[in-house]
Length: 127
Image (tube, rainbow, N blue to C red; front, side, top):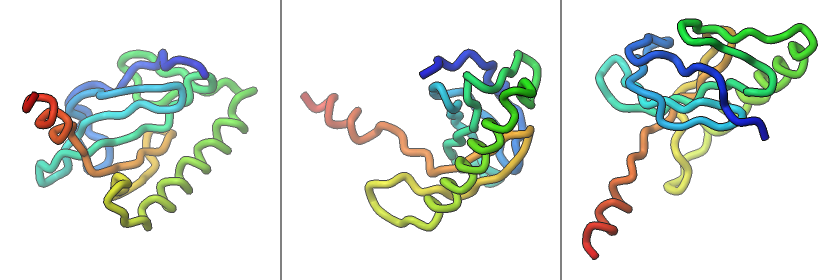
């Protein structure tokens, strides 16, 4: 799997109805951000950004996709969007809730409840 070498969206950037607070993780296929909604509630936003197919430089919002990668990128984009749609219909205590999913900046964003690591922090600090 390719490592993520794409520039993250900048702190304070508005994406849909959400404002990016900071990047919290990345992998070969996505970048995950801590963000806030219009009410100030913290959410996690997963951005479809496959490192092997798309390139985004600092200061840019949309990725560049080489013509030979465009078809594969679009198929992955559609699958990511459909995954968001499917996950939004699942209600289970062990699955992070998908609140929204939308297209912007020539990619797809999946908005989820932000689950901090408070439980494990509390358990570790009690020892």
